Amino acid sequence: MIIVSVKRVVNTSFWDDRKVMDNFSPEDKYFMLYLLTNPNTTQLGIYEVSISKMAYELGYSKDAVCVLLDRFENKYGMIKVSKETGEIAIMNYLRHSIVKGGKPVLDCLLKEESQVRDKSLVKLVCEHILTYTGNINNTVLSFINTIYTEYKENDNDNDNERIVTRIVDESSKPQKPKKPARHKYGEYKHVLLSDEQYSDLVGKYGEDKTLDYIQYLDNYLETSGRSYKNYKQAILTWVVEAVEKKNYHRPIHTLEAVSKTTPAEEPVPEMSDEEWIAMMEGTNDV
Image (cartoon, rainbow, N blue to C red; front, top):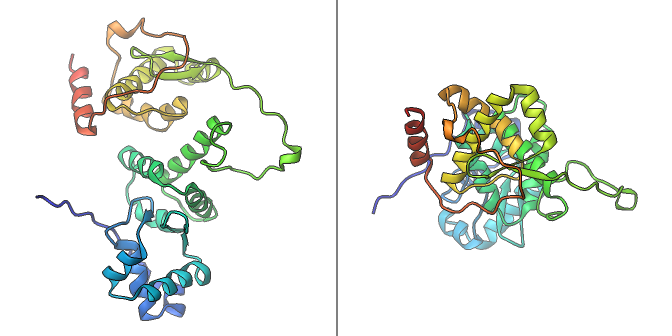
């Protein structure tokens, strides 16, 4: 059996951090490095791990692990522990874990976010990152913006599962306007855009370019089995850059493939990123 190892990057500035230098005991430093690099970690910095497993991997008793978790959550404010799901969120992880970024990393973050069971942890992490006044990686900003956008698109159905960008007094909240109808676009009818969203894209890029972007995204959704809550945001976030880089143009037979009907069903089959990229490169050679 082949075991694929995962590397986690710890910046050397960890040792110069004022909190680490002034407050951390040797035991605290050891525990913090464990939180950053243990086998359960994710790119998002939110993961599930049991007290028993932590005790075994650290060589500590369960009681000692509980004391350390309480110290890092309530004294240092560096983590948040979900008692309901056993998940741990490292509040500052996204600031340091993303070195380069890009679409594959964004997809990874979105996938990991979908697997988090306690969505309040995602809310806390994103809000904490946004309080930082220094430079934030563009991919991290795109991830946070996508999460916010998805919540706004579905707040009627998922009030407790997405991040709210502001606190609203329920007693004074105005009645939410009816969502505009969205129509199917693309050869496979996976891309859903309202009239306003489509007009915005045409006004920004022109109709030919907009149809290229739509078809590129439509092909990706057909082969990957993915879906988006906000297709316009997906086009703006990564599709435009991908199409221009590949100099992609939709095939002639898709020129008349734009259709305005009812929302699409959920996409089905999955394809790996490598297979999809190979397919797309083959399409461009036609």
